[in-house]
Image (cartoon, rainbow over all chains, first blue to last red; front, side, top):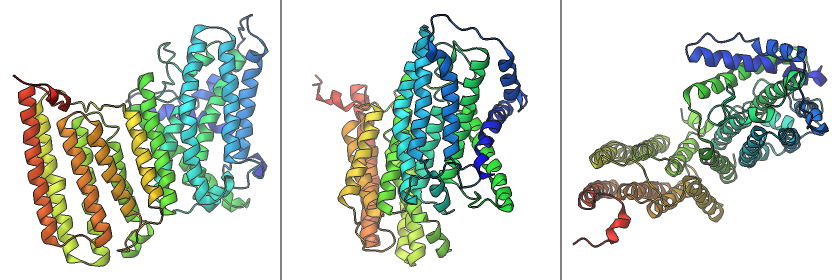
Length: 305
Length: 219
């Protein structure tokens, strides 16, 4: 049972995206698509034929699989409803960040491969954001890791109590900015449009169609849910089961649904109330989040909690 | 109630909030939001003093808290807002260096303070972290005075330094005697009023409150 908890992320990630879209539509006074719409989109894309440019190399064809598999590998490291993670023995949070980076690396290569202007534009932006986000993510993760005495994410989830210290709140707020930047949500990138002047994530996927596009979109949904899960594991893990008994798992699933809903609500709220920033203003936002993460680490070292 | 304050480390949260409002000053772009950050800082400061007063049961700390909120939390912000409104144009802060750089430098300042005062001085016993935070706030206030162009932002930097000093004195000795505190606060109030008038006069005479222009001779 505990070996298959990563399936939760694979199967329910489109649902999380649908919920965010629905919440966002409701906040803006629209009806919006149903929460299962991402599933229908994926199925439709899987049925379609592909158009592949004949100047592309093997990288273009391998990338959707590599990205998809790397995210699945990352989800295997993360405890979802029980801290007995499938590969909990070998996976820690630093490995997880770099498994995700592998996917991003290939995505960038594929964006360049077709040789279109928008692909190059998209990846240069994505890489700029990645450079700024990665150290900040690391610092906020380290705050949680130091207080748990381990970089193993299951152990971090086990040792955290419900009593908060300022350093955790600071690290959590930095991590939320990191999630927004990584999932391409509004102050950083607009997930709803393909406007050539502003797109970051969509720019890289522009050449993909059919099955490959479905895989890329699905991995994007999975990455989003994975990051939500990491945030929940590290900063508010209460309710997560330490064993694999049915009663514990039931409580933990309920808590997990609640936490995912809260994160989706937060994302929808931020997306509805903020305007998209100009790309050249992003370093200022991400820089402030970096200072928050730095302060969280310093506060932890100074206060010892 | 006391156990509750201990368990949720309320004092730590408040002192980190004071530090954060000081650091947020580096990222703000409008004068009005700077005044708001200062107001929030003063409210947190007086709340911290009130909670410590409750924990140790000292009457003169309650008085200090109330006087702080009246002067720094209400009167000075009101006056600053009035000055900002009188200046009419140009609500921007106009720092000499970019926001990202000034944020980074203030982060480094905090790191330096933490590194040099690792142990913390544990005199009054309510929290050993407050002294570091107060010194960091003093340094950030000084840094703000160095890097901002406008006369009014320099006044706000000075006020932040004063808040830091107040917190430092308070964490080391439980505050000075009430009469001295009252004197200091009154001085502050007068100082802010005089500096504010200066800022308005500079603006009127030079049609800008940019202090760099004061080096130009007026015929």
